[in-house]
Amino acid sequence: MSAALIQQYLPGYPAHLRAQITQLHVQGQLGTYIQTRYPQVHAVQSDKALYDFCIELKQRYLKNAPLLDKVHFDNKLTIEKQTLGLNTAISRVQGGKLKAKKEIRISAFFKTTPLEFLQMIVVHELAHLKERDHDKAFYQLCLHMEPNYMQYEFDCRVYLLWQTLDKLSNQEV
Image 1 (cartoon, rainbow, N blue to C red):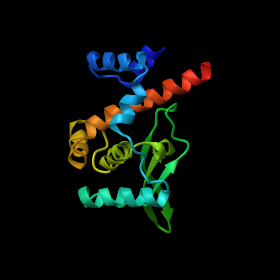
Image 2 (cartoon, one colour):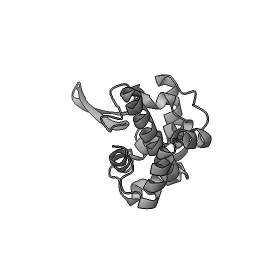
Image 3 (cartoon, helix red, strand yellow):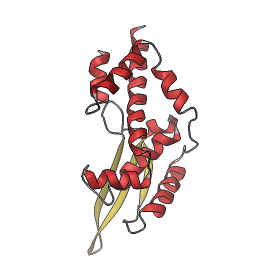
Image 4 (cartoon, one colour):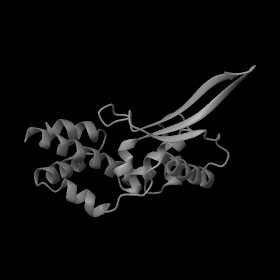
């Protein structure tokens, strides 16, 4: 079961990295690995605080990107649905004009994660304001906004794996 989950959470990563994570899991050290690297949970707990966090990053790196109308934590975005963040544009007719509202939704799961993981998912969603596809330009923009983006993404995947494995082992007890 854990081998399938490791493949699910770490697809595309080299076999030696997946083997290291498997070894940490077998030794019961996966949680220690994450907690040692990222010991503190952030203080961004409200939708207002998340909006301010996003706007500050957007102003620093994406001044010419479209304005954000709404940013909020969403309880419907879950690990099980494999959706941790969404960047949407909702079009509405107002009078005789079509108005597009830009919105970012971040899984409420990120309320209890280290700041680096929240920053990684916010950077990811902000990058979609400029680059729609997950291509080379998209990841270059992510790295421009957060130089450690790739490491944070990997460690966030390991964190998600650890949380899932922990949840499954508690269900078996």
